Image (cartoon, rainbow, N blue to C red; front, side, top):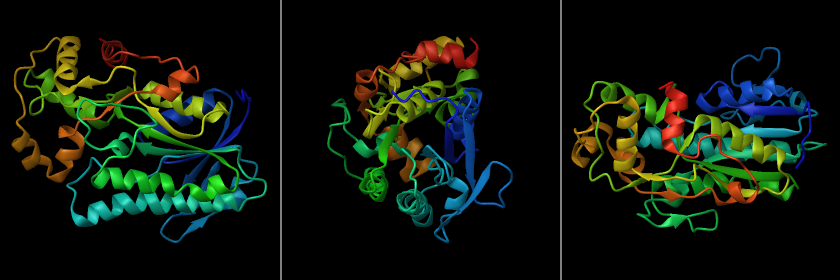
Length: 303
């Protein structure tokens, strides 16, 4: 365990759903944050331009750790061919650029924590999956595999690299839960399709906690599943959400309706089943703030 105080930590995607929470947490902990931004940088910011292949590495001098979270939002807009290209390029090319630039620095950061996703495992039914499991098949699995491989230049340069395979992030500020809350509060929520597909969720507080854990724990490298210890079927997830909100959950969304509404995205984000376990987090002593969905929802929703 590094346990350093006052580290200098660079973050891409610092204004995003996860990044904004992580920056607040790290700042409160006494660390100096450098945000990598695409616009004209302000104080505490460094310019990077993925399309132009540029990163101001001089502005990163003295950085101890880099957390790379930036990428095209996969849950906004239908997955047209152009959208899918942006999703891939923003992750793969962006991560390769960061890895190459960090590898060329002297001195180099100690660690690069690069976001990935449990989409790496594909649609696997009820099979229990951990960091040693093989990759799945399909669009998201291919993107995630290439995304993680893009960090290779940093690994080869001796930088400790952690690929944080993040699950369904639970927060009322955005993501899946924010979209589910309005219909559920009105009493018209329900399971999606048969409801037997597993959703490997994680509270926003545990995403932040796990990323901090990955930065500080020198024994962690390679894939790290950032999910709760309690993956649930969509049906079970629905029942817990209804219980916390004190609303009925009797209006299911048929698979064909999900596909009509979201297109190809529905297959990967709503209908696929991925039962992922946080084996490496638990092995390295991480203590979950919210190990169960009910405790997470009560805390996040103030219910």
